[in-house]
Length: 212
Image (cartoon, rainbow, N blue to C red; front, top):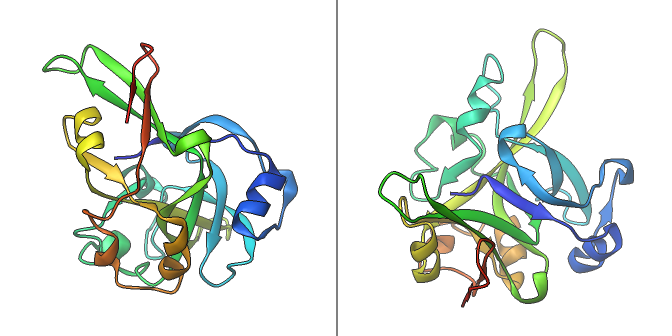
């Protein structure tokens, strides 16, 4: 799964990497720890505006939802079942790139998860990348507020991530740079399911060990 990430690069670095312009620089933040359960606004690129970096809330709220409560269950979407789930069905053709340069997972060292090691996972040199995401627009019928939200797709873990995320053995779908345009152009979703994956580097933050 993926509930903790980071985006610590500067606005200029992000714009250069994605060849896009941030539409609201005042919203842009460099963050070493992003907690999905805070439902933060983070930088994304949507399929309809590939040259613009905007900010949506993490935790997808489908357009039909009566309130925001569902977002605690929609931080992630399983790529294997996303087309079947009511929460995501209306967003299948609303693709986005969720901009990041790292995410965090905990490896259980005992059967109940009371002892864990925290890992930071990403690309070499903390390079920027994007998670495969879906987005939605929801209107609060009480206030009339329009809220833009997204979810991050997950897939079966590759060997490295299965060793770290050793309970559910899942990982976020991190797109290869050359495939980001394909994702935004709505190539079939199953093309991005495991064994599709990038070559991660994982750093054990609780010891000096680095896994490759």
